[in-house]
Length: 215
Figure 1 (tube, one colour):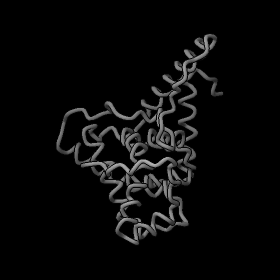
Figure 2: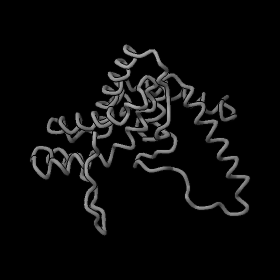
Figure 3: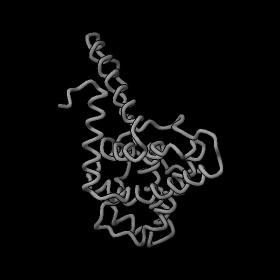
Figure 4: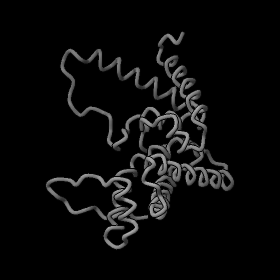
């Protein structure tokens, strides 16, 4: 599936439309609807690609199409979206359903391993879809601290990667998207209380893997 054509370059990027504006643009149709889809794609493609990596059963080769299908489904559902609700958990709920369906189909037709492969690293993508890595060279005296930070990040990443699939998705949404327990519950179809409990368990496991005292 082809990505939407890039928007013409402008000296000053326009602010992203609000959830209410996106819904209205989708309802208007024509160029407004096209711009609404472009805004959804720009705002969520990288983020959902990282989220898709938390589904071990979703083949890496299918992730682009899975994310595109989820964004198309979200766009088609925009006219019925209630703008009084937060947009991101709603989009992630649609994506979670799509990813789960594709992973189940893949499990039925293939016995090959379809675990995590090359793709966006959930630990290096922020809520805005950009990399968290620094592009500035460290100061001469910062090498030891940088090495320690890198080692800590690797241990935390490994701990999250080793979590059960459902906990990996919760960790992705809590630590990298900064979702509340209620928003995570909305996105994943879980009770907020259950999400809070799982976040507590996940924090303990990650701290233990990082060598921190969890007592």
